[in-house]
Length: 64
Image (tube, rainbow, N blue to C red; front, side, top):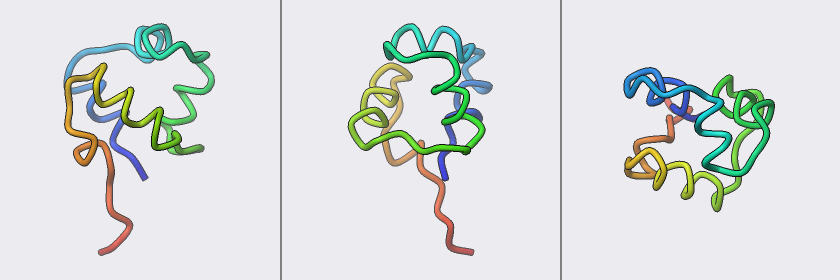
């Protein structure tokens, strides 16, 4: 699971903007944000760089 949607909301950034910066379609980024699909490690690193976040802060543990 990831926190991409939460971080975008915290920063007031739209998924469309992230999709443009990432070079991906809105549908792909929306899938990441809705946790329907997970970005590759390479894409997750790019997202972290774009959002100026530590990549570890974009990942949610599945452990309770």
